[in-house]
Length: 494
Image (cartoon, rainbow, N blue to C red; front, top):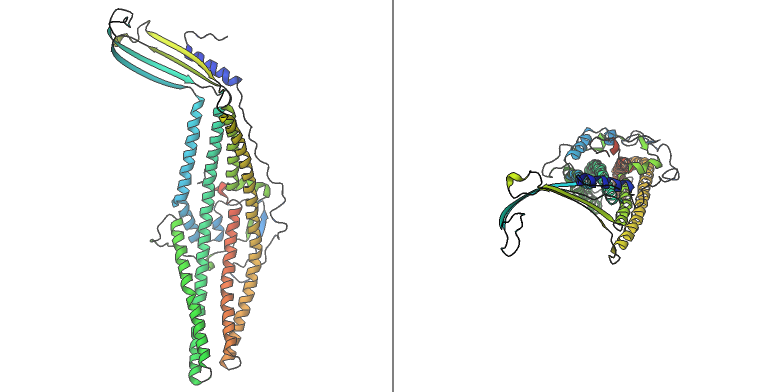
């Protein structure tokens, strides 16, 4: 038996400590899901892709299993403008700053909930001037009907966490805080990847515009030749009209490319935290980029520890597990301990005089008896939410592996596609040159020349797009494998 006489507040704390010691944390204890037991991402993948010598972005790429991903993976493209723009974006982008603020909100909410572990102490002072009715006995101990009353008081209340309600609540909030941290990491990766992709697209568009301008020049020269031949009677008006139509079609492809280029510039300006009216200093060309030749290949068992979206889904599962304990604890008894100590005097100067003190201690317990099934169904809902979070986690893991597999397939086919595009461009150029010479001396018809021009035009555009695909899918692989956020100082650690 614990006897509390002169120190009720201390006695309450002792009782609370014993309740905590005797208590238990209800609900399941969270266990991390096991990593997928799979040997790889695709059924078969060559260790090295094919190459296209003497062509930008034509280098062979090799996959290095187990290699870590640098936090600044974009530097592997060896483009200072790209490095500068991404670093500026990571400092100024409002979406990233918003995610960082959300992390701070989650952290403070967790710390606020932890305050429930400790007793609540409050102090108060009241001064009262009163007069009682002549028909009743006077309130003070001596006969008077008009008096003043001064009462300083300290109150202590404490709710022992006997069944772990607060501990499970803190556990859930901590998991939500970790979710917010992984949102910061995901935003960091997405931002850097989006900037890199937009820069590559800009470079691709510039190359397509240059190719289109070159085609316009070739077709303009050919039109001049045909017009001279028409004046001399060597060709008909139909041939000249066909070449005029061909030139007009090529010229018509230029404005859409210029529009896309302007929109990519607008996108890069906004991603870097600026307004489109302020043109960027950086400009991107495919020739200024270098293709990374050694690519990291994260082990499948490590992917779930690196992808922020998977880690977010796992923390959502963790939070759902803790909320089962919260719902269960709400159905069990709750205990409350309160204590007051103070003084009461009729004269302010007698507040601390002997005999004017008072104290009280209260211990209470509340057990829900009938809630119309509310608490029972809330617990069932929490358990169903856990199953939902578990399936969402599994879906996220599958999507992550699909993302990596798709990117690996793309890299393999990009290399082969570039090799084929180079061969097609070279063959089309030879055909166009020979056809042009033969037509000038009358060996072939204009229709043959028109066909050769169209083939060369498409081959040039295909080559530019094939080069851009290799750069873009290489950047996509770094993003798919987690982006190396764990190696960056500007992403908060746990």
